[in-house]
Image 1: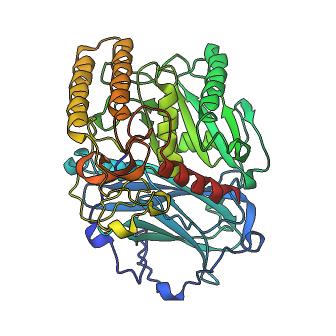
Image 2 (image 1 turned 135 degrees about the horizontal axis):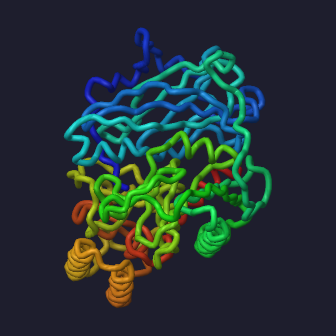
Image 3 (image 1 turned 60 degrees about the vertical axis):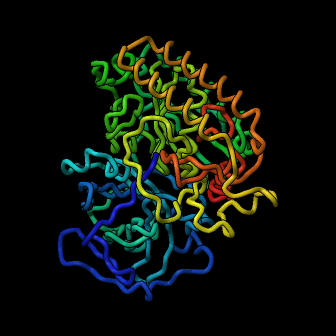
Length: 490
């Protein structure tokens, strides 16, 4: 999903200081006093082998945001790498540092995106404030730490916007683990969590009588994932588990067609007034259930045929399990969730406001082409490929907008889901015909049209699963995912 970069006004401080917006006076820290090791610290010197989860409330509107700590709890055994502790990828709209207070040493960091960050770029945020519950997770520190939260400024550079101190020995920090109460299904296991990418699969809208269906859906969509690169060749790097959460009835909440339900994970379609966008705002429930197993990434299967899903970097992926295009949805949305990949399409209806491109996007698969000589994916380009890379954009766009109008008409007419699936199938066939005659269809270059923007942004290849429903990552997206996997397995 596109993340609109906004000026946060007075919440942003000079880069030499951090601001605490919790109760009590503001705390300022000179960044030059922080020891940033050239490599990673020794895990055992700073951490216990368990996970600390800090839950907080994220409140704001289109132009400001505020934070308040909810709780600090144990989230089970530490599932991440014990050697790759400092995040060198710097992906996501937000970022956090964990700094040991006594030695002022940076001991952990990670990038992430959030529902609030997406909501802030919608028209809803212009109308008033809202609050979202969020979490960050990191290894359990042995000593008090300063947690510093950052956000990208208008130049796409991370800038501190909040900090708070956590003392692991405080009575307000709960070290108790949750006792597992749900049935856990092991789908794939290849080794210790600290050396693997751990994926947990949850389900919502599956009734007690449909638990076998949930298990089969989880296995089926796991098989789909393992058939696509880089997951196919990297199968040995993955551990995958499923947790059963039976509901009282089948299906989830769908407000646009007037189908209202309450489910264990509170997944709902219609997020940000987009019929197909399905998320849950019940972060605490989801996190508590997921903590019953080690996990780095999370997939939530929706027991619905209605086309829909979502994916947010380092939060979770959702996918409608029974839709004809479920295979595409899970792979595409994991591209967002695991790789921080941007959507490359721009003719589909979205809830975000397209912005004028003035800086280079941070997403690894989109460029504003402001510096052709230093293109971010230059290393995988063949010499002689023209930039921008020519393609029959005008004809393709005309077709794409026609499909979108037809799609909107079908939704308004409330036709059966099979009608929408037939439209997508027809769209794929026509796209194949368009692509087959393109001169640079297999080349890496800079093809105009990406990230909901028709002009001024460019994608790496003519086609990719982040652009159409063809289930294959382009070379740049695949390489980006491989880089993320390496961060969890080495």
